[in-house]
Amino acid sequence: MFLLRFVTILALSCGLSLARAEPLVLLTENMPPFNMSVSGTNYARDEGVTGISSDILRAVCERAEVECQQILRFPWQRVYQQTLDDAGYGLFSTARTAEREGLFKWVGPISRYDWVLFAKGDSPIQLASIEDARRYRIGGYKGDAKTQFLLDRGLEVQTALRDAENVRKLDKGQIDLWIASSQAGLLTARQEGVEDLKVVQHLNSVDLYLALNLQTPDELVQKLQGALDALRAEGALKGIEARY
Image (cartoon, rainbow, N blue to C red; front, side):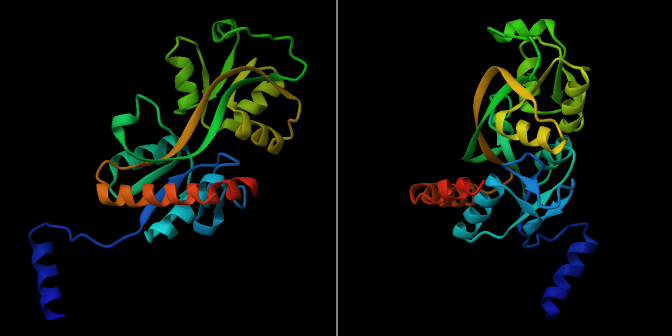
């Protein structure tokens, strides 16, 4: 005990910090049915976070015998940046795009979702290709890979800090199209009391991953990936998905 106290005092006097054994902190946002707070609020932690990806990663950490804490926060850009900057952090559910590839270490795929353009149910809009969407007002979620997908192709997108804002704008006729995932989009719209939406263009199908800070040890990444692969082989992932 005396030696530990002496080392601690010496480290502090030299301006050093001691490494502490801490759980892996997995950050996320509300994106039902993949990750969401039980209460529907924009902050939750551990058992207050649920969804397909949340439950899968909980099972992965248990199988890998890695202590993982889940925290749901808002907005997406905040948790994305924290995972980029801070060791010991991960982010889910994250699209593994070419632009992000070298920014993180990856575990997955966890699940899969579709990127689509929604219009109001009574809208006359018909799209033969993504190019046809250029003439319309499009709403998207700020900092999201789906929004960036359109921006990279030269389309203009009105971005919102909350995806629910896009639902309300679409319902009020303030935008013509909304880029979202087919699964999460319909749930978000339903939560806002909007039922009458239709898909006018399928854009992409994307695998979702756990993105880990680059300082995450490769051994830990491999343990998590191995646990995920084993659970998939056993059929456990399909069982989790079936609950939602």
